[in-house]
Image (cartoon, rainbow, N blue to C red; front, side, top):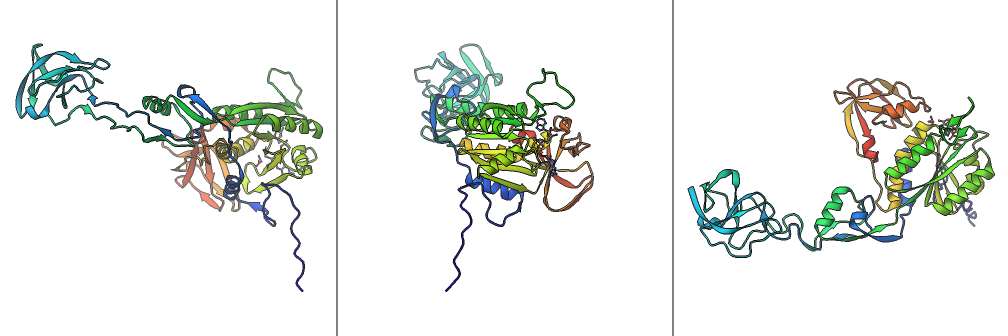
Length: 423
Ligand SMILES: Nc1nc2c(c(=O)[nH]1)N[C@H]1C(S)=C(S)[C@@H](COP(=O)(O)OP(=O)(O)OC[C@H]3O[C@@H](n4cnc5c(N)ncnc54)[C@H](O)[C@@H]3O)O[C@H]1N2
Ligand code: MOO
């Protein structure tokens, strides 16, 4: 008889890594997050004008064509192309004119022309327009040098978008140009996902909530919370300020309980590693829901992921540089997925390095960086994880691969601009 199979202890934890997995790469961590984080389901209907920043929960169908009717692209004179030819063309002008919002409702006879302004519907009998700068006129006739190309300076009905076409698809986050498009297509209302609510909690006995408070040398100002809250607001989510908790399990528990009630997902910072005062990781572990992912990453190795009463918790490291990098590399794409917009990998570009570094194998590294006037990436002088000034100095991150690399000036490196993270 074969030996009984012993299953692993039931953890009921979507963040749990498979048995035996220890260190995982940034890429594996992202792939796993992508597979497990659910999008918000609730939808609401808004007027298009109010919907900037929101994520479409349904495709948007054009209610009318853009443009709705054939019209003139310039100020000039319109006529039937068929009655014109090469050389100087002199055409009698009809009485009246066609302007945007003031259509000419009669037919222009072939061999005649009409004064027409930009945006005016082409009157019956008109298929071509000559630019006014290319014309002479005495108010009864217009003369220009032919030949003019058929349909010159006109716009076809629906040449941009046709009625019934899908203008934007579900999952698209509406930006100002999208609002213009939807409005032009007669789409008055859109169905969007409810905005994701993201709670932010800082932990640490040393923290002072606000820089207006006087403190001792043992105190530091809570820099992570306003940084994370403003990142979240900039990403179009609803920031939920959960304040800060001292290094005390009961206090942190109460804050997390509150966070799980008022937010869909919680970002904490501090207390994520394994020291005596690292209460966040201990508390999450004690609830049985902690999956402390040891990610081969610098900075930000001690990232904790857990479910707290059903709400995903990202336990970011306390060092502001590590908290920021982990927020960009993990929270940014993960929150996008939870908002309904889908996972969003940052846009990056390959540029020559303007620095030297011998990087060890086995972990991915992110350096604070910006492009110099030659378009090469220079990096901040220190890699210290508490050097917040480097975050403000930088305009992006250089991403060094998991493998060893000897970077010299001119070596191609990957630069991820802050803008690619929606900052
Ligand atoms: N023995 C070890 N010690 C540490 C390790 C390790 O592997 N073994 N890892 C280091 C690294 S790397 C990091 S990152 C930190 C992460 O630790 P925690 O997440 O537990 O963070 P804290 O210890 O609470 O704080 C670290 C540092 O950051 C400051 N901090 C915390 N919160 C804020 C905030 N809201 N605003 C500004 N600054 C903040 C805090 O005062 C500490 O100086 O652990 C290392 N140690
Ligand atoms: O995550 Mo720590 O800040 O790597 O340095």
